[in-house]
Image 1 (cartoon, rainbow, N blue to C red):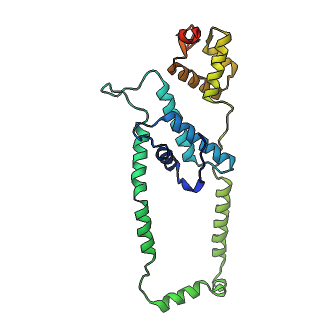
Image 2: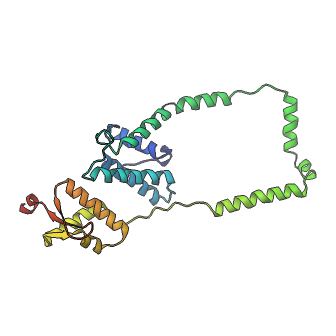
Image 3: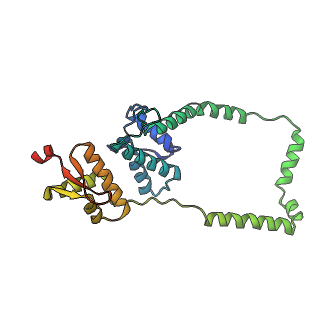
Length: 249
């Protein structure tokens, strides 16, 4: 589903996540990670198309969402000390609720700040006007100029230049892979071959990011019961084949 957003609307990644939750009327305690992850990544792609620099906190939250999605796809849940299953979304929900509480009082704090700024401190008005006139007196500043002040200004300019040169840049690389695309590729490969070793899948695209996408695609196919795996020979190797129901169809 396509959506239109105004960039100044979102002050951070949690503001964006709350927008998705409110827009789709989602339960914040039971967030559909797959859907909200796709919407979040689509927004980042939207920023890239507009040549807007993606802040590091957006990249961090995007990677957190993908990590949670991968944990939910794993067949073995993580248990706490009492043997209860740990929901990978729990920490994200806690941060969202905390951000929502802070956001609810922002309007009140802004009103208080505006009210405070409208107030003038009482004092010696003539003295304040004289001080302001001395500050804006360029000739007086030139008369008090010495080598030390010039060096201090030069040092500030040099420091600012070095800070701009060493500024950290965040670059998001768009990889030519999607989980849905790799799922279709694996199913198409299994049409011509009854089963396939995971090492063969890795050999087709040996780069690290391709292996990750293929692994996540296999996890989703397992969850959808479209494929099944059999432990094979070798270290961390297994065979992938279609389930009997799918094969019969």
